Image (cartoon, rainbow, N blue to C red; front, top):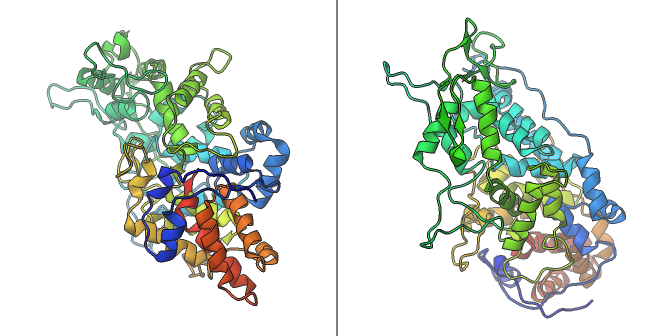
Length: 548
């Protein structure tokens, strides 16, 4: 085994330490115990960390055989695994609907179970990861308005379907989604009525600009803020622009209901028309981004499609959305050069088309800052968010699960489909406390309680599993660690195996030695306990939880 004199990376030192062994494994700086592992090529393991819900032994072998580019192309062509079709239910829960009826029709339970099951076993891993990232940019939350799974499900399906399409298509579908319409008030948004004092709701107009497209300040292609002659940042829009967009997003309503009290959240919204006349849309002239003037007398549909084009053509969209996708898939602090390369891919897919999402994903995953066996940059990587942390641990050891895992994710402060606000579980600009200005979005969820919850989750699944508890947890979750038993008598070989498979050879020497010592303290007569000890100490460490 080769040892390289490289320093621990700063991101990996942020998670707090709670025990003596944790202090050794997560906080001590030292040279890396990096190794060349033909079984688990480091760059392939890193690719699957970035582009799936966690490497498996089989997926590493398959990706290694295919190569990075061929694997990505294969994933682009893997059929989509659809969300389940849920029964359409009344907005108000009938008194007769209790127990599992209430759970399955009036909570996010069935969607959360599907999410984890598909993340653990679905073939369309890259699509899932991109859709998961998009769901945290184009946020809809069950904590406000979109409270039924049959309302949320079609929105999540929309993100799956559009994950490999075009930004214009995605933004159009998001805008006309009943879930988004309800969440951010495009649904039944009405033009100005001087008599009643009703004004167009500005909620979606503001968020589509601030969060879904261009952000608050003008950006260079590399994602850095543009500055005026006085060295000040330049706003992208003002309140007048928000008011003009609010007028655009008027005149939309749901399609006919499925039955009495059962609204249609399945199909995209339609223009509100009475006797062939649009009654709620403001069809007056409007001035949007870049001073573009829309003529009067235009339909709600034409206004909306033109406004989507107006947004999509803004130069900020590439660096603003592109950088967030980099953060979700690869690293929290991409260099300006990395962002610029992704922005260039956003601007032109090689055929004169902008906003082509597969081209952007390709650029992100094949970029030199994403690839390579080892990254020595002190700000490289990102904290693995709770849902992804759970699936990575389970996929690594061929878990059998009923998918009832959201309670654990929620305890780590990521309750799927229930973000606290339109700003997601964590904002992309969140800076690590004590991190010298480093961005660390997922660290917004990390505190002493959630850090311990992560460790306790690993302890649970490694040393026994999650037991069944019908009806909500039919079979529970168990790991299969048996493939490691053959290595358990040799503590160094066991830790080397975990280093290569779980950490692409980037384990520090201090961590390596500490785990070897802990394993050797377990009698050789108890091989399963040796394996459990090693897996627990690796998977609960910050060096594993901070994906580098």
